[in-house]
Length: 69
Image (cartoon, rainbow, N blue to C red):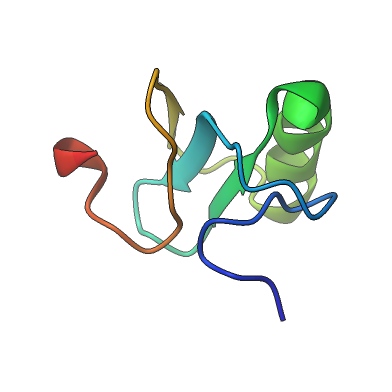
């Protein structure tokens, strides 16, 4: 099981990109190396769902309120 602050595709904890669906069924983060993979994964796992694409200068975590990152 991935930690809340660990990249979906590797073990990096320097994740500055996050995708959260409007209904909160999809919530994943990725390091800069895996940004494109995160976008593809979100399209495959939550097709046709409105998503928020969040970029930050601070490290992100899954499961937190995206308004307060």
